[in-house]
Image (cartoon, rainbow over all chains, first blue to last red; front, side, top):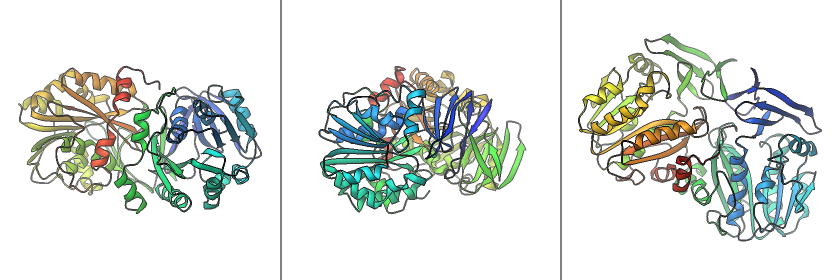
Length: 278
Length: 278
């Protein structure tokens, strides 16, 4: 069988996937977009040669990106999702009844179109009436908001290339200003196995801006390094405590996982002191 | 650079590693043994084309295989380690002052020799005076013991080929008979991402024999599926509670990780009812 060779330049292991069929391949103004069919993972979305999601395991990432912050928040009504053109994060956000409005800011419209066509179970909520799509730079959109947002969720590509602007102190400052007093923020922050220093840098940058910053993880087989981190920040409330009942339908995340996913205190301290030796 | 293509037939992703140098390659009576040098992971030990350990990250696996059971046990003196010819599990077992005797049962003497030569930081405790090496089938050795062992630790290759005999109900029965009343047992049990059904089967088989069976995990980047499981069993004591102070030197495991690594109750129940959908 033909193999797809993932060319992630930042991973010390490279990953090969069987390809039953190449379903789509094109270049948008921003990146190369590709969809392949794999016998185990189903359809796989690839942007600039890096795997973004597979039909089989996307829920681990999307649930863990969205639900910890949505459950730690007392009443999230207005949400911004930056990136995540596939619609997976939007789908999870809309499982929360409190949500009235989701600003869906995806720079590359073509990713939305491809996802609607090839990943209907992921893109299923994009056309919900509460969703307002804007195809623009997420950092620019956040700058325009003024303290009316409850949760901001960044679902970008890796912290390189055009996604870099979503990991700067300047961006985190705009995020804080855009959030209401109860507001919370979460972003992917790469692998604790392969990119530990980058995880620390994101945490340090967020701590310059937010009074409360935390880190949680999930194991994701199709992301390089797989011990995937999520960096979360909050203006007021602790992120480890759930402030709303867990009553949504999920495959992995639940109230137990919410508590267990956060890095334990001593390990977190050693990480931030750069004392974890790997 | 030359690539090493890991040919694990049971993994839906294949893994490629850069090879700076092939340091060793030979066939023992049991398997092909290979050592390569990789720029990120350092030296890598490969048995029958499947990666067993890397210098950089072996401690995640060895610490998590050994310390939960050794800390849950009130006073482990006599220990059997089956497999683990590299010596990593032995090294961790001997960090516990209570240990008086370790029976080190490795079927393939050549793995021990190769590890002593190429992985001195892993094999460092093999020649300790408390260690008795026996190059024989672990299942046969366990059958000969009668209730005098405190902990039995299986550090085998994957649950296929000649390691299969270490995952049968018959073997688990011998293990129980070999253990003292406080006795505990732990074995690797593959990936929760890629081999969920196999994890369930191992747990079910252990439950036919032991009154207490549990499951914990760690994320390991170099094992296929990476969300690695360890199946543990006990004749008397709960495994989640530490019965001895944590005072050894470790890089990953500690008292926090001991608690956090076990699968939360509701998720465990859903797993065993075959309700986890992936």
